[in-house]
Image (cartoon, rainbow, N blue to C red; front, side, top):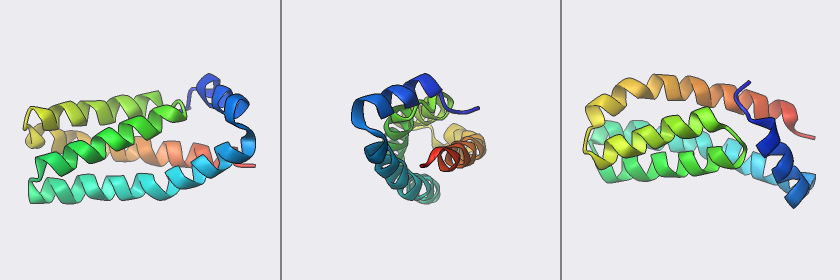
Length: 111
């Protein structure tokens, strides 16, 4: 299980299940785009674009309690701040796998 259901349930309780469903839909649209941005900015060696995409993925993943994925994205963000895209490149495949797991889990939770 990739999601901390306590965080997810609290989000649902405070915002309502309809709004959470909208947030999930937005996340499922945006997260693959952010992964694409990470890959393209890696290829272009655009450290700032990479950092921004990692930051966005970190924050949006944390919203749903995807702590592991959020932490992976935070690591990538920090590596970009250190201008270390070569090490970040080695971590992208694991982040991609975690993202797919989170997406599958979120799809299963939709109303």
